[in-house]
Length: 73
Image 1 (cartoon, rainbow, N blue to C red):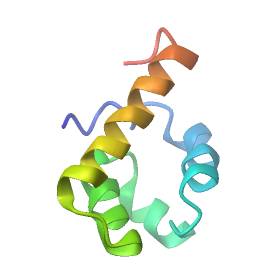
Image 2 (cartoon, rainbow, N blue to C red):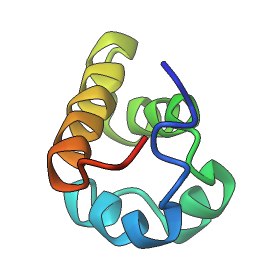
Image 3 (cartoon, helix red, strand yellow):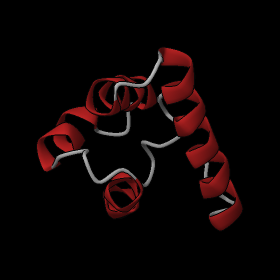
Image 4 (cartoon, helix red, strand yellow):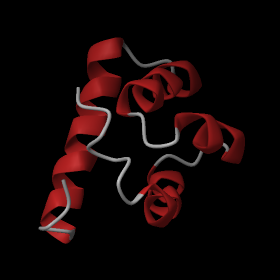
């Protein structure tokens, strides 16, 4: 997973991340700083998901971001 995918507009996206996954804390967000792998790990921990599920959740979130922000890389 490319950690740069969600790092470009991290400040604007924090609210979207927390709206989608309410168990992700502000501290989690500060440490993640756009790192998709870290975010997936936190989702695993917070929700008890398998690694594959957490990575799929983040990938799907990234795809949705690309639709909302077409110029976003």
